[in-house]
Length: 611
Image (cartoon, rainbow, N blue to C red; front, side, top):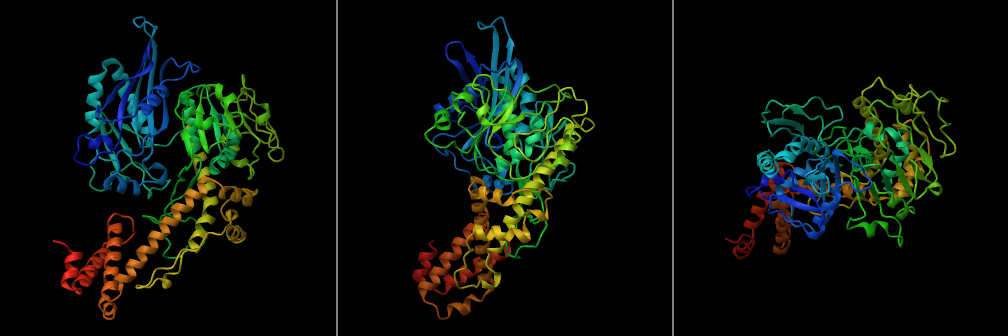
């Protein structure tokens, strides 16, 4: 993201660049255009974008196709984020913040017969490169821009980029009007304060909205029900795999199915952000985030994931090596070659061609990895993993409308026994509800399930916070007590997930595996960082409420200078929004610094306050 006031600064708040990839008879996929032209991509990044912008030869994609990919940025972060970008990210849910080390690529690919081309086909992709995971917004934008671009080419693209360069910044919590090509997109940028029950889009603060041609209900949310239709019987098992950060290969018939499935999987888990949910209240000084409402936001996915991946990717060798355990990554592919290359992976999901809207999909079967065939693998979830929690029968009946005993196996017992629905069964799918309603039912269930899992962890973490009465002005603040896994597991008897969730099963076993996952490490580091910042803020408040002049009476110059330096450090962090303190506290801290400096000899004052 470019600094404010520089060329293309507003554009870079949304996109890094726009790429055009075409098929060259001599070179294969080639990068035809990058706009703005001064955006720098490494050769490795250019190569990845070219290969990932076209479906591979195993995907017969005729006509127009949309999909997405995610690549690692090469050579480190070339443009460090400025203060405005960091402030914007802090108001966003963890899962929707900018990616500092990865790019998202949103692709609109067109392949149509064209006798004027030697190969007989027109093949070209328009790619939006961004650090924002706003898949629904950018797909809608491509749907407007790409068809026009394929007709008018570069002049059209330049005009669109200039329009985007006039858009307001994607500040969390704001509802924005985004004009492009004679259409106004109206979007709401999610914030940590949003609730799942948020009503219609409304302007906030001083914003004036233009009449909207297209109102997007979300910038990022997918149609989970449509994505998971063939695997609804196993969505809870997949939720466990994602919660635990398990390696998963998704083999799909096209990049569109692959990328949507992978993105949907990485958003299966959710947690309360800002609020604490039901149960006993944490200590009054435990960090609550910017708002204390009990709202649900997705748990940040701490593992790597690639919505669409090919054998030409620069990380192919890294992900396919057999010399070490499979990496914690969710990999979306379309080439059956990966079945042979990655058959040592513990979990492989093979999905078939999507059915026409309204048709009943056959639920994929749960199969043991030994049944995996390298040449003709049938749709199925190939895994030896046994779910810790029992399936929610009521949820599946709501989504699939299947009476127990009709076309299904028993729920408990052998994990290989699965719910199976005949393609001709007219009562298999709940057809009276729209896909949006079914998605809302599914999303609510998954969020509440994750909330039930996370709440005990949040409560235990809050109990590790020192008491506020132990925070005194002139002493180092007390430390946060260590997280002891055995103590936490013992606490589940009185404050476990059974208080908020009706599902039975081996919750203890699930927590034990969670402790070994990247998601526990990511969650713990984030919570510990927030609590440490809160401790520093409370300590600063305690100092500002004390009488500094009385304290300085018997203190040496070295002690006073040390206090000044520490107060300045805290002030800088607080002004950078790294400490949750009130403006009144900041003013008092500045006054204390001035008071302390004025008590020192002139030579020291000159050192501390140079002209």
